[in-house]
Length: 351
Image 1: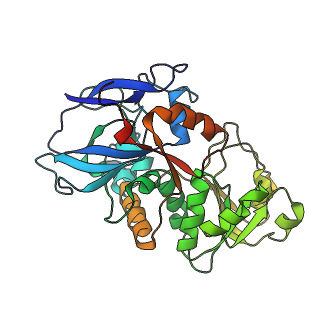
Image 2 (image 1 turned 60 degrees about the vertical axis):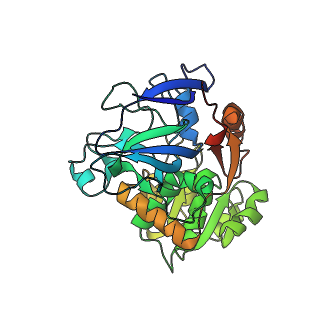
């Protein structure tokens, strides 16, 4: 067994705190990564607190993982010791279903295996995530981090980056596209950056007037206050694509009316309550309301290469491991621009 230290939760009411555990010994297809940084996703908090009612304890969160390869199995061909490498939201899938064969492992028909709160295939129990010193992952689910990328600022690309890149790529956003991004948080700020780099005309929708300057710095061509009916009206029936990153209740019909004929709104934020859409919002202009989940391994590597080519990383605030509960509290108040990242050099040597 590989002895590890990290931070985890033992029950829904317990804080995330020092935790020692074992990972499997690396097999012939495994890569061992010494974790340098791990991004903090809202999913970490949901899972640690069992807000989705599916957490297996103990739980070690973290699925925006970057670091350096320290060991490889005998059959590993894609990585060498010393390489920069990353792990995103999944560490396994069936690899044989139609979705997996297309490189769409996130839609595995058997079910993807999550980087945390999944099932450890060798030693049993839950998979443990990136709030830890090292991780063992099958080479197929390890990503190569291009040289020159800032590791800390790259970490959130493994979730926030691919969650926004995948739908923009799938719906063929590019030069000549008019794209809306709803919300300027961890997901939204990457959506703005990536859509801008793809050559689209980008409009940011926000309920906060104070975000206008920052949105334009990130690449938005225009900023619209979504509570202002006049501003919204000026964009009626003009968008090819809208990426909705908001995870709170909000009126979808207001945005559906901004889509042109055959336009698409894709939901990547996950509100707790069902979203309501009036039938005529989609019928009247043959509009589409869609959803999207992260990306497969080939597309995630494509996203990393795209971001490296265009000089894109996340806007981050680096924290120490023992600041995680404070970070969670601030995240709930949207008090971060725009992603917390844990420096694993601050992890206690023994827990």
